[in-house]
Amino acid sequence: MENCDNCNDEVGHVWKYRRPTETMTYWREERRCASCHPRIQERFGQAGT
Image (cartoon, rainbow, N blue to C red; front, side, top):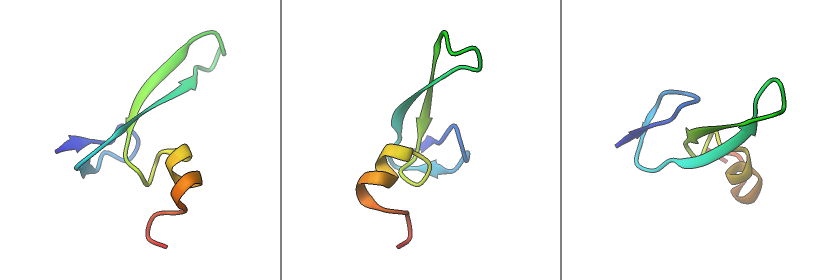
């Protein structure tokens, strides 16, 4: 099991999510579960619906 960097839930699979830092000069990589990852939500709809 892996932990989501956003919600800290223990899930079976996480996806890499890259977002710009506050200064917009670098990218920060996070590991997010399906319910926290914005692209996964767009593609498959909100979790639990």
